[in-house]
Amino acid sequence: MSKEKDDLEKNFLSIFITSFTTIFIAELGDKTQLATLMLSAESGRPLIVFIGSSFALLCSSIAGVLIGKWLSSMISKERLSFFTGLLMTMISIWIGYTIYTIYY
Image 1 (cartoon, rainbow, N blue to C red):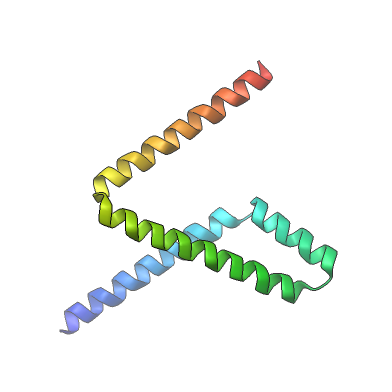
Image 2 (tube, rainbow, N blue to C red):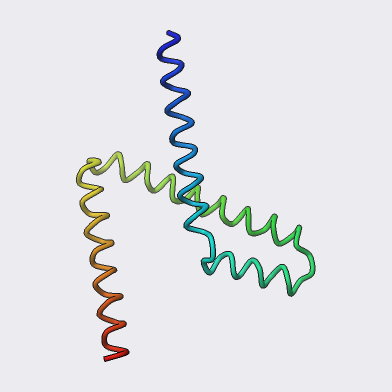
C-alpha cells in the first residue's frame, strides 16, 4: 500500500510540475500577458486586473482539460499524438509559407 501511495504522489507531483512549467513558460511574453499588462497600466487597478485575468486563464484551462479528457476517451493516445503532431506541422508550414510570400 505504501508503494502505491508513493507512486501516486510522485505521479501527481510530476504531472503538476510539468503542467505548471509548460503553461508558465508558454504564457511568458504572449499576447495575454501583454494585454494584462496594458489593462493594469490603463486601469490603475492591478488587483482587479489580476483577479479577472486569473479567472479567465482558469476558465480556459478548465475548457482545455475537459476537451482533452473527452478526446482521450474518444481517440487512442497514439492517434491523438499523431494528429496533434500533424496539426502542428501543418500550422508551421502555413506560417512559413505566409512569411515567405510576404518577404520574397
